[in-house]
Image 1: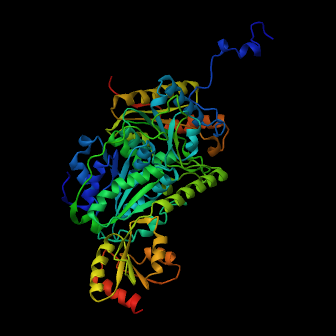
Image 2: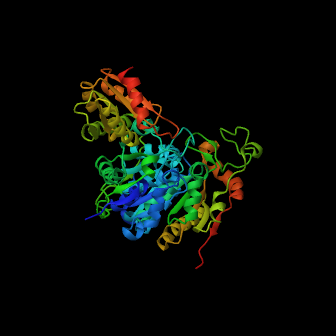
Image 3: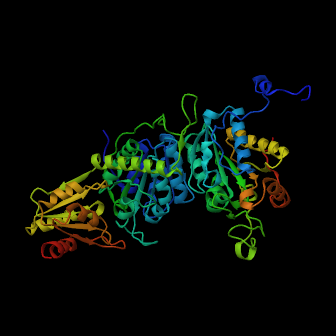
Length: 260
Length: 355
């Protein structure tokens, strides 16, 4: 044992605590697959709510999809929306409780396929809500079918030979659509596959929450994510594949930043 | 002292909504009920009470806005007409499954499909037998006058919040469009406080509030369904509403609601002039349906004619109620046609008295 190493007894002492689960995450075991980006993104949101001290002000809206049970993991008031309708649900909550902080959390099938109309119109009206969009290019919950964001050539259970544009159309870049709507105030696309990216993603999500107090419009953050199970890869392989394939098509960075 | 005013049924619903202390109205235009949102837009409810008014991108969005607003504990309502209500069915099922209170107005037009913009009563099944997926019921109120259009708004909210259940006002294009005198209740204040189950932000003094209809555990999901069914049973016991007109000496009975019940009153007058002792039983709550009260009438009358602007939907409930004790038949018109009083009298003679 090295001379300056710490014993287990010492390690669990409070003064030696350097990192812990944020208070805003419950003790429920996450049902997400190992390596999935949902867990990291949940943690970021919970950390931000805790750091901003807005637990008693915050109302979240969960989607249908892998993160349908999100309300089990976050110690905030939440509503579980029908598939694709989170922006409509959040619209009413925010308009009826304008002093509160309202956020939505949706996957690509939810936000970019069945809920496209609600997404576009909430953003176009400039609803003062924070929208978090997890884009992993696949329907995870139902077993890995093609999503609107599935890349060209990418295999899924409904595109077993790869997505073919002539048959299935092109992947949709929702964030590029909403950035052009006058109702959006802050739009960013980030990822959580490296520590550096996690920090950048946190910064963007934090801004998306902070700007809500300004009542200037919709704050929209896309998180390009992996889906090891749906992509049939190990977590590491899926992160590498994402970096090589997803991010070139969905480039990261702030896309609409308010003028300071 | 409030005075009578002359108004369309749709406008009366809108004015009553403001006065009932509605927190939010979310809707999408569709004939024959667009006057509801138009009246609200002109009446500036934002200034009168602070009420939120929003024209949504679709009926699908409207009903999900109701879900969100109801989940926040607010008094929320929407109105639409048949095709729009069809679009809302998924959301209505979620609202019932999450036990949320709200008010939905259906100013029925003829179907199926795009159908017609003329009045009809062909959404009875959809309204009273569920409509969306799963085992649930709406409380369904059927107004027969512009006055009832107004009165049923606050009654609807009372029932919705009492039972944490969506309430539907099932009207039709005739009552929505016709003008009658109506007297409004005075302005009710909006509720400042949300109920303790609402999502208003988790404070240290309570656990977090979750609004959901999801439970993946079959045993728990069944328990929840049993709880819902117990609630529905209680509603059936306590909330049946109906009106009996000239039933005391009746030998025959019209059973009709809404516009049909209005026409039946004229038919009744005509038939009685010919010496036919006929009464009118008007269900006001279509769900819960007045099965017991109609069953009681079966001991008195020789036959019942269910008069509906449909192919015959409520008639099934009338038959269930009388349990084969007396003859029950149906007369109705479809496609937006309103039956005339004399053709109803003729149908009574042919299908019940002589048949």
